[in-house]
Length: 363
Image (cartoon, rainbow, N blue to C red; front, side, top):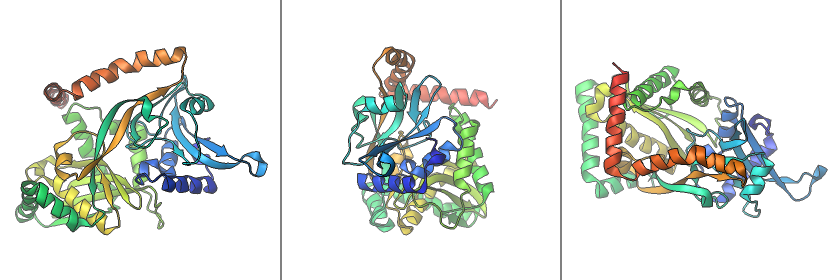
């Protein structure tokens, strides 16, 4: 069915099954994110798996499989390219094979790039495994700060000193964890688009469905904001001027970091790092126990993290002639990216080349 066709009972059951899984309550795995994607992606679908008897012979839902379907049956994870956690939601008491699931959905393949750990149906089909750095604030911010002071004393001391210098030299520093001003979101998206161009990467916000999705998730200001998946815009201000911002998704216990950016005019003060420390403090105060920084190598993630989760990239493909076509179309590109990523020196050359492309774009 289309995500918008899920009824209240099915949504409630989805949440129950996620709680039973024991996995971190990542907001990307909640029904609200799938429903949000369904509003901007016409190919979004959810397979509802039912088990046992029941009224009408249908049985109760024992699983939910969100996906996007292409014109020739190629499937992708819901929100592929921007979703940081993907997979099947299934009762621990039930089993299904990947082939059965894909056949029932009329899919020849299902591609993922951030499959969560603990997905036995699809992990065997993964081509690569990645670390997704996290910040554990389950014991409170002071406990996290103590970990940073012990493990990275120079980093913590330097970052906090830069915040104080920023206040002395530019004006009062103010942080808002859950900003509702749409102008602040526009500023963040402008910074992020400029960052994509500057580093030679594809501007995600140039895709209408992504920018629309983010705006929809950011403007849900109902009093009972969905506990499983709500947008949170955090902004660091200096003299009432935004200098760093982040938009992410939160559940009751997890804040999934998504789109951070800062004003390059203030780069010497490391406002992005200051923002993340303030976010960790505010999130801990709001009862959140984990900040998921997302897959991808970055110095700031290494400096801030306390550990890693595992995510996977690959595809589950049904046997047949289309499986060969899929591998011919996707594997060469994936292998080339993997080859570069796993060789730091070559990756450095590639990054410098991308930066040069970015400079040429801006001329």
